[in-house]
Length: 258
Image 1 (tube, rainbow, N blue to C red):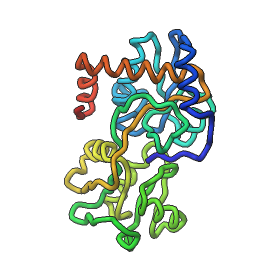
Image 2: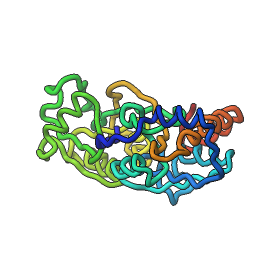
Image 3: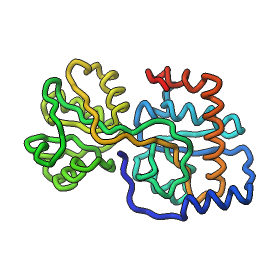
Image 4: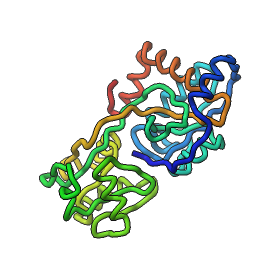
């Protein structure tokens, strides 16, 4: 899971309740969403396939006259700026990770996955299961349970954990895994599968789920008065896109189904 520093802002529930009671109007606006590249959820902003969550948000909020602008930025900085109100929101977070953001509707699932070279997969249940494994981890990302503790404890020991950052971090980790420079990589399953397909490593690498799945959302800033309405309009717009079949058409562009 992409991680967040424990920055606290006004309660998202309090903001939402106040705005709904007041019925605060919002005119056609530019909605500035950011995140680090995390295909197929959000990809290269300059691409004709910027990510299915980006495309859904753009079309859903266009129904209410809004323009969605998506820019790539490191995950920790994206979250920090969303909490402060410097940007409108972030793409691809969940309730546990971002309790202070005002979340739109579920638009996907986060399913953590571990990746091994083909034929080398093993079950990860305890810290002992990670002994002898060099893990490729990504800066600013937060992992589940046993793996999270192991990464935190060994982040400065490259014989156990190798930390890298940047938009191409997963790509580099998968290439390192194939080359034998690490023994396991971690990321969200859809993201991993998408990148493996792009790199044509289907025969070289093996993916296994790890931990429980959680719902992914676009999260809006609790510091901006319009955020609750944006979340409500996104919910309504997504429902309209699903009813018309357009939601499924967008997912199909990324090899996904509802």
